[in-house]
Structures are given as C-alpha cells and as structure tokens.
Image (cartoon, rainbow, N blue to C red; front, side, top):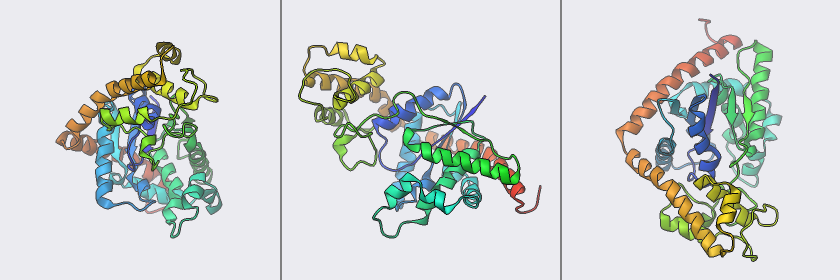
Length: 328
C-alpha cells in the first residue's frame, strides 16, 4: 500500500476551500493509502504567533480533521512538534539546501516583501517541509497548485541527498487534485479562497453559523446579468457558487445550473447557502463534541507514537548515511 503525507498549518480558520480542496479528499484517500496527516505547527512559527492562540488553533485543527471524517483507525493524525525527528531531519535537509534556491521560493518573496526583521525560518522552512515528507517514506503528496514549487524543491533535495549519501530517501510524487483545488473568494472570485484573507466576507469557515453563511453568500460577488450559467471566464462569481453547491450537494454542475434555470440570483444564493449549511451541520456537531474531549487527546497521543516509530527510523538512516554519531 502506497503512503500519502499531508501537512496543514494551524493558522487562520479552515475555510470551505480548504475542506473541498483537501480535507474531504483526505477522507477518501485514507481507505486506499497508508495516510499520515500532520498539523505542521513548527511551520506556523515562521511568522510570529500568539502562543495561547496557536495552541487553540492546533487543537481546533485536529478536531476538524476528525470531525470531517478522518478515522484514526485508518490514518495517522499527529502534531509535528510532538515528533522530534521533524526538526532534526529538517536541519539535515537544510545542510544540503542552497541559499539561492530558497530565496527563489515564491512564498518567501511574497511574505518577506517590504517586511522588517524577516525570520530566517521563513527562508529555511522548505527544507523542513521536505523533511516532513521524506520521514514517512512518502509515495504521494496531494497539494494545491500553489504548493507545487515547494514540492519540486522537496524532490530535488531528496534526489540530492541520495546522490551524495547513497539511496536513502524515497522520492515523492506530486498530486494536484483534479477538482475542488481552488474554490474562489466570495468577494474576488478570480482569486482562491484563502484563510489568510483579511476580508471576512470573502471566506466561509467550517465553523460559521448558518446565519453567517447565509449573510456571506448573500453578499457574494456575481454580475449584473441575472443568469445562472457556468462560465469561469465571463461569470467567475456565479461559476464559483455553482462549484460550491456542486461540491456540497454531490450534484453535477449541469444539474445545479438546471435547478436554477429561470430563477433570480437571490434564490440561487439562498440555495447555495442551504446546501453548505446542510453539509457542514454534522461536521460542526462532531467538532463541538470533540474539541474539549479526552478522546481527541487519545487520538493525538496514539498518532504521535505511531509517527515517532516511522520517523525515528528514517532519521537514523539519514544520520548514518551522512556519517553522524555512532553507526548502530
């Protein structure tokens, strides 16, 4: 059985775009692959975080994984900082990384542009990401198309390690989801929905109340034509809402278009809201049952134990290959 690794940062709020593009696919993948799902909290501190808030978001993200359908009997769910091999292997991968290739990373350039006192970790976190992946002998990494540059660097670093020190690391494949990878902003439908968007009207959180969802979708940008058709070029706002309802209801885009034939945008937006609320309701109920429960701690404790076994073994191979310590 092939192995999949995926890591999500515990920053911001998990959006409907994150759920459709990643979380929901994870629940399907866990039945076919050996899955490791990691809350990458060490990546989060490349930018300054409030410690108390970070601990809350780590736990919230873990609860959302499980509430969305991740089965701890089928997949390993764990927190990155609870597996020391991540930071240790990250240092090893830094040692074979070149400053020039790290400075070329688009996200580094975007996040450091115009900033004073840029953290060195913002520059060097791609090698840590590479370590996250190779520690689990990963075959496939499902990512959004905005992460393909980092994945290409991961492959480059793994190949460089093997070239220098002998075949030690598996070279992971990149998998970009065919559908649902980019649910768009409700206010700027030519841009993806982002959990870091300062405009709260632009995103739907998995924990938004029904009233909040209705209000956000009611104010979603469409156009002046008043015709519900799927045309991403000329009708990006309407097309985005159609994609959302299709993903939430399981109906095809054509079926959703037919549903609103002859109806006004007000009816259309209300219908999309109903589909979203109906889909998210059981997830929210599961989340609130889990968030303060001992069950969640047990899941994370067991996940860390399982992850430590695999990651520590890979780390030891890497150290032996590089000549570190005493060979055992």
